[in-house]
Image (tube, rainbow, N blue to C red; front, side, top):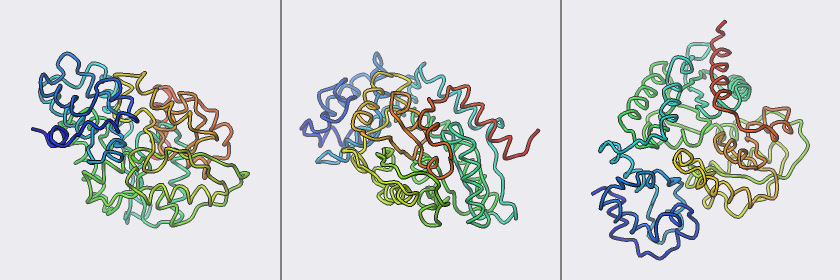
Length: 361
């Protein structure tokens, strides 16, 4: 029996604490134990979307008296369902297609440092590259000013495949990424996406991953020319237990000259933006419910440090900006009003970014 399912079956007291904060549990069960029992009975053959409807945000774990993790259980279910041929689902076809693009030559590239003595690699990831090629370029240029021996890599950590339980696709992507980074001589990868950081920390610890926000807080940021604003902060759920990262982001916001009004659910108690676990693919309305929790709590414009969170919350009526916009974007008002990118525009942005970096015609 899979590890977290076994723990939930043996330890869950069905106290109901996790249900109060989880739209997924409220919709599909009366307790995590019930969910586990139902899965063991028939592997959700007739309702395979259920394990794929969990955001896997780990909020349940943070508030459970026993530290049980329904997201981990859901991932175990997904992985077994893939092995049994039940998953991934038809609704995941676009995710698989996007994953193929992220690791294709149309986007993927690694560029060593100019002096060919590469020590670190900047890895902006898929979502930030799709959101703003300009922000990626300016961030990389600034890192080049401050850190000798830094190169850049476009590509994917394998996250989409990992989240839908497709280990056979995820593992080669993960292994190839580590091989490519080490091949150019780098001993550390600087990551822009909190989810990429989470994946790399778990599966590629030899790359010594560190988030760009920790780095920028240490090396300093360019002088700001913006007027001071009070912001709310949305912390991506993948940083829930990474106390240094939310602290670094808040330090950067203040260094830029802004101040923060904390919303009730932030840092360790942050809600998922709604996109976690690729839930939107199988249950868009459930994803929207989670997005709405954060938007409804906000009384100011929101700063986040995940491009996927930015796009998701903005798409549900939030006023959201990426923290790197505060540093490198001179048109903040336009950024706050900018709607989420269409899939076509995201793909175009990623192709454009590679073209600029490689100086292709």
